[in-house]
Length: 211
Figure 1: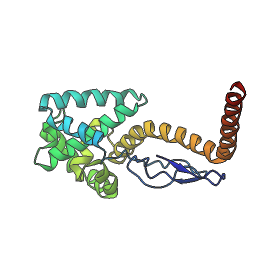
Figure 2: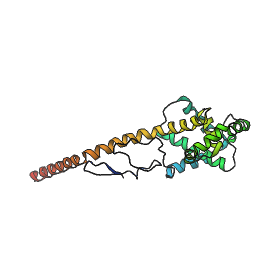
Figure 3: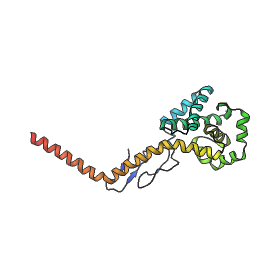
Figure 4: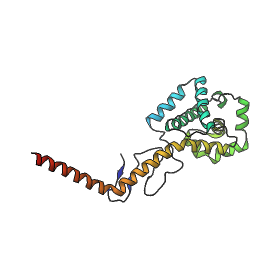
């Protein structure tokens, strides 16, 4: 539940609204651009488990579906954003367990992926964006190569940023809407409380008069 002060002093905290990052929304701030959905939530873990349980063929089909959304440049829904991140997290788990990325990416060969993984720019991107990759559940050049194929971006940094931007959009809209609601209650909470009290008093008075 969101806590707020009634004196127009802004939001106490929004730590219960967890999209994977901590900190306050409101107080004139815009939601940060690197918001991550809560990877510890039961719903996200369930989706990761679902993707992990898919056979190689099923996983490749899911990969194509999500890849098509990236290619079309359509806006992601929240469900699609969650699915994308869950699939990437599951892919990271498979790669870490010994799977070569080419085994879970459709229409690729080991030579194709190895060429990407051995590219100096890809290796550098893996170091520069290590924090972002870790949050997504990916590691190293293999993780970068996976995102490059998924987003169809030849530049490794562009691939990482594009994935993060597209999957964050859905959550940004939710957070911005929430921010407006919180600001409204923060600024007008006292007046709304007075109105409610007046309404309750009026209803009580009518009830007494009737009796």
